[in-house]
Length: 376
Image: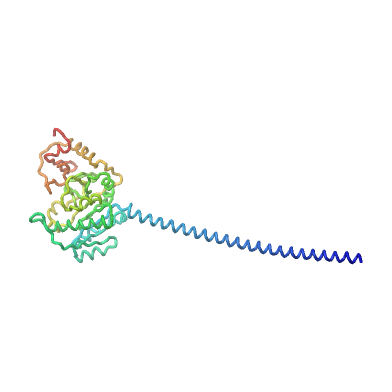
C-alpha cells in the first residue's frame, strides 16, 4: 500500500514535470516566434529606413538642382547681363543681315551677357522676315503713324522718326525688359573682335562716374590716317553715336525730354573705332560716307587687363592737361562743328594723329582756360 502511494506521487510529479516542460516548450516557441517577428520587423524597418534615406537623398539632390537652376536664372537675369544689344532697323534687309552676321560672329561666345534684339521701325516685310529668321535674337516692332513736327524749317523728318523709334526701343528694353544697360547699333554697322569686351570694361567706369552719359565705340575722326593707338580712350563733350551704350539711370533723366540736347554730361570714345559704318544709303543720304566713314579703322585689344581709372572726371582733366602741356604750338585749321560742339572735342580741344603716331591738338579759344593751363 505504501509502495503504491509512493509510485502514485512519483507519477503525479512526473506528469507535472512533463506538463511544465510542455508549457516551457510552448512558451519558448512563442518567444522564438516573437523574436522572429521582431527580427522581421527590424528588417522591415531597416528596409524602410534605407528607402527613406534614398528618397531623402533624391529629394535633397532635386532641391539642390532646383536651387542651382534658380540661382542660374537669378544670375542670368541679375548678374550676368552686361547690356542688351539692339539693332535699330527700318527698311534695309540686306544691310541688317550683314550687321547681324557681324555681331553673331563675336556675340556667340558672350551671348548670355549680351542678349541681342532687332527693333524695326514700321513694317517692311523683308526686314521682319530677315530678323525672324535668326533664333539667336528677339524681334521687336515699332509702329507709330503720328505725324512728325520738326522744330526748324528744312529739317529732315527722318531724324525725328529715328529719335521716336530710339525712345520707344530704349523704353522697351530698360523698363519693360528691365535691363540695366543697352548698346545701340545701326543696321549698317560691323563690329570689331573686342567690341563686347570693350563695353564690359567700360561698365565699371560708368557705374563709378555718373557724369558719363554714354560710352561709344565710335570716333568721328577715326579714319586710318588720323589714328594710331587702339588702347587709348578719351572723354568728350561731343556725342559720338554709331554704337553706344547708356545706363537705365541715365535714361531715367533723358527719356522725358528726348531728343533734346543734354548739356553738362560727357562721353567716352576711342581713338580707334570698334564699329564700322558701311551704310552709304540711309537717313543721312550718304553724307560724307566715302570721305569719312568708309576708311574707318578697327582693331582689337585685351580690355580685361586695362586700367581705365584715368578716365574718371577729376583725373582726366589733369591727365589731358599734362599731355597738352608738352605739345608744340602750330598753326591749325577750324574744327567742324555739330550742335555748336567741335566733333570729338573735350573742353573745346580736338585731338587726332597726323601723321601717326604724332598727336595733334586743335584748340578752341577757351580750351586752355577750361583745362586750367595758365600762360598758354
